[in-house]
Length: 112
Image (tube, rainbow, N blue to C red; front, side):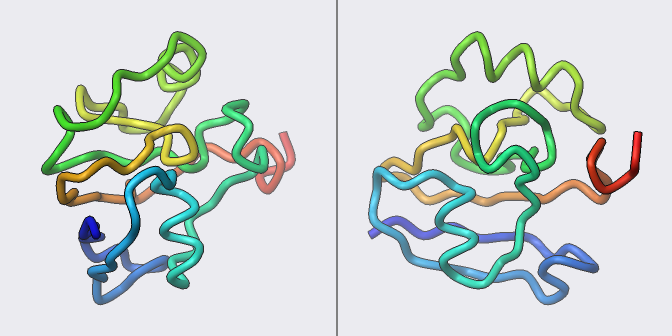
């Protein structure tokens, strides 16, 4: 099992969380399965940035992002070198520490 630690986020996960998951699942699916309601407006199809996360520990253990994900990440609020779309980042055997950014850009809920 791999442990994912979610740092506190005032709305989604106020106290933070530590979850154990099987490798091979996306970070987004792992979060959702454990009641961490991370936004995913495009239904996890790599067509938006609402599930953007920052990998604070374990980034180098993830598979490299594909070009489509890299292109979407360029549009994310608060982009950092260790940013990933949680719907695309697959959990491996190394533990991860994840920060969910304070803001997200959601064209659907913001009526743009």
